[in-house]
Image 1 (cartoon, helix red, strand yellow):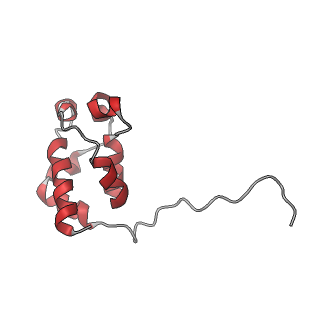
Image 2 (image 1 turned 30 degrees about the vertical axis):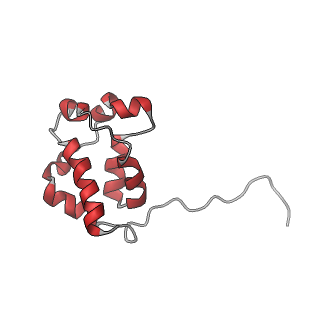
Length: 111
């Protein structure tokens, strides 16, 4: 076969049916303010952990909505619980409680 200098890339689309939705359902029950988030980025801009590491709170919300629990577990461990995100949130999302509830949900659901 002739080499044309490029290869086919693997498929990057997300299969929502295979991803875990129980964590989001648990979180909606224990921290209802998760539904208020509009992904404005204010939390990420003020995050202390984001200044010292590659932590991104918006990616936590994205992984949660997509049901990508493995990526979510690694990301929430980086949070320093400083609370700056909660102070600047225009919608009043309780991000500290959200992160703590995520830890509890993953532990209780055995994921």
